[in-house]
Image (cartoon, rainbow, N blue to C red):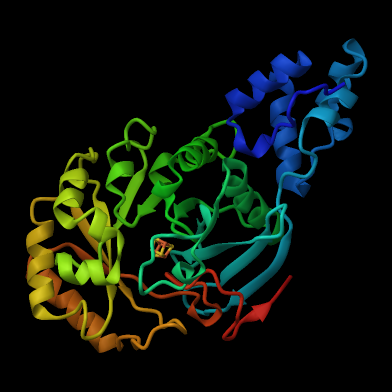
Length: 367
Ligand code: SF4
């Protein structure tokens, strides 16, 4: 009988933690864990009676299957309620996958083709909504509804694998929500994603992106994030402009952010990614670029230029290709390592800063 033992959500546990749970509650462990995980990836359900290793163990431990079924959450992988595809013959197909939490909130994850679709990156959400209030971001208009638990972050990956048959190589914490506003759950999800006995994603293929939460960055090593990549949403290096665009800057201004990122240890040859949204007439002005270059000087920085994606609540327009290229050239001329990000998924509001709205502007529903 389950008694008062809470049900375990296996998706939120690393292999070692899952084995410890199995051992302490059921007396059986190692040989069962891999089989359970394989079944979860295949169809999302935990039914111990289907797992041969459970049946074998039950021969020596009558009632094991019933005890396990009573203890574990039976359907931990969230249901896919919609999936919207944007076909691109050159770069591959971007898919926005919508899943649902147990109480009905929509979670959004985006599967992004990389390298001509030779491999894929999954962008996961860490909160329902977000309270950081960035003015260029549609998710901000929702406010924070609630934090996601580790199994709800990992569950997005399992749902996408089951729905698309694609196993992403990379995972980026850049979807709805500010990861370092929910640091414990994000750190646990990173441990589960990189666990060799589970999804086994290489730490160098995991990126956590922050709006610049200095408090979270100060805990980067303590949270166990030192082997993964850091991305910082910077956009401007002038306090007045950044505070107007990103309210977090009022509480955690650029000097504090500069100090926090300078303490992050980066492996030789690696760089911290700084995202800069290209907003014509706002972030691309020469004085802004001078300030940006000065702020980045001495950091192992790679600037990622992201063309602004128009959202219904703002009047800014998207930059032209020529404007984005001009800003890239201007930063390179100032000695800054800079790359352009091709915007994928904007037709279904799956592009950067556009998550959090179910309205479609194109694309094809596949679910
Ligand atoms: S850009 Fe990120 S941190 Fe800022 S409001 Fe949007 S989801 Fe939150």
